[in-house]
Amino acid sequence: MAQGDEPDDQTTRDDWGERSDGGASRRGEGLSADHWEPESVVRPGSLLVASTELVEPAFRRTVIYIIEHNDSGSLGVVINRPSDTAVHNVLPQWSSLVSRPRALYVGGPVKRDAALCLATLRVGVDIDDVPGLRRVDGRVAMVDLDSDPDEIRPLVEGVRIFAGYSGWTFGQLEGELERQDWMVLSALASDLIGPPRVDLWASVLRRQPLPLAMLATHPIEVERN
Image (tube, rainbow, N blue to C red; front, side, top):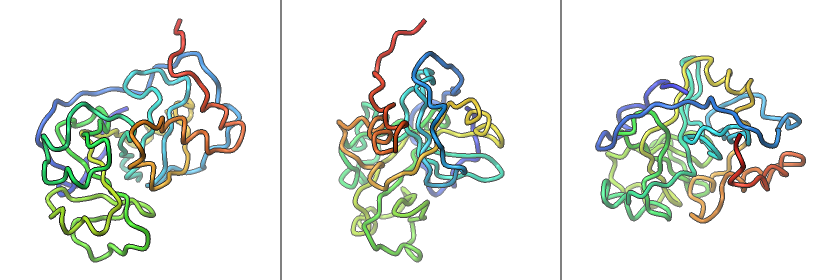
């Protein structure tokens, strides 16, 4: 996994942390998703759900929300990796809008010193002319962290702030999909701001048709050779 196009400067904040690089390259023994029928196209709003055979620590059992996917590459954030850092400690003005746990999430190994924010919009909200909000897909929007949180508050059910992101250059993600490192599935707007104790990886798989739903019972810890 490598860096793709960086998000627009208005949607990120470079305030803390260190950059690290990683890749979705290690595979281990596990249940196979050979017979699952994936979505045919990755697009903004898709979920990349880690295969049971993807054992690279940075991406094992991760769920990635795709924000951008075009001829330049792909960009997304891991939406099920909370950190130990409270949002209040780094962006206190946004803390009250952040869904529990009110922690900074680790969005990926690229540009870990940048903050990126996604929001789940309230049903029926029109944001076409709202400064600071850019729709990604359905009820999910990117939030400009330089915006006034009080102007955003009436429009959203909650927000999630990520340190870093996951990026792919052109053709790189396609190679990982051919290796079946990822399952491409549909997202729900609630996936971004779900309860902290929910195993999102298992929850997303559980709502799929059989046989894919059976992977939700795959143990968190498996013996590795």
